[in-house]
Length: 366
Image 1 (cartoon, rainbow, N blue to C red):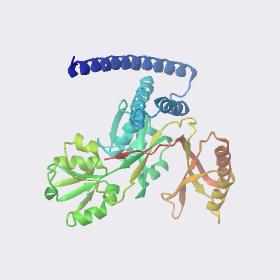
Image 2: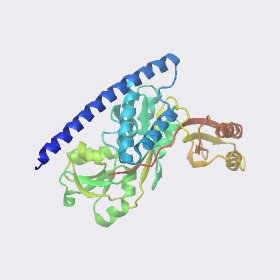
Image 3: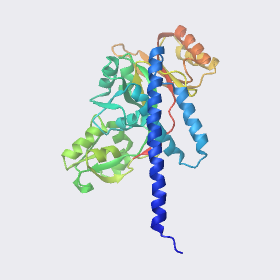
């Protein structure tokens, strides 16, 4: 007797439908429990976000999975679930460098999921200002690129505004040349943010040597310009292609592979320990020989791993600099706390910018 394959497919699909219904029921139950936790935290005046608890959830899920479901997809699915449940306790408003579909917007979605409210700002300065004044709960800003280095407008804003770093996102980036028609012959000007233009300068010089470039304040703004003018090409994100209905001319025009941008999430309060954290400081040095060496020695004596150091000039004070320092560990860790106490004594200016969970490496965003 021959079995009808269609009957077998129908039976399996019915089982999938039943499983999907169970998943929705369980998601609703999880959301209900998350809201109850939020209510209890409000009563106890505890922070909404517990990074250590969240990290343990992911570790447990990976163990339970036993490598059967694709691990990156599993993390992505549960990141959206966990974030949506957390934001149900209090929905986040996130300011970012706009317009819509910038790489900063993509980084925000990667960190907060799709449930947050995203508000586009015209500049990085505006993102900081809105967070400081409480107009938005959080902001997200680029701070450094693995090829082009620090984003100085972000570092300078930390010297001007009072905010705390709440988290970080690392986004591996591949740049696309896009325009309305998808034909490179139509492009008379290539527009983008200064950093993507710099990251693609060799490709542009080789393949479009006579076409001028136009720096604008964001990749999203460049995509908008390309959407409105058939003779403008843009270096933009995959989200911009969909948002502004553009055509890809060439994918992956960056000069070097491994191009990753690090973004910082800013707010009013840093989270507690996650067990894999980073601490950021803003320091001013004493005006004497060996001042920087004294700081590095103090951190070394506490066995603190320094992840980054960057100097910026102090506005209005010639030849005066402040230093941004990233170290591994949380301010609640004994070694980091002790090291920071030493720095307070050694520095003319000391500000703790925040302690926050270190970001995992990201897969490439095209």
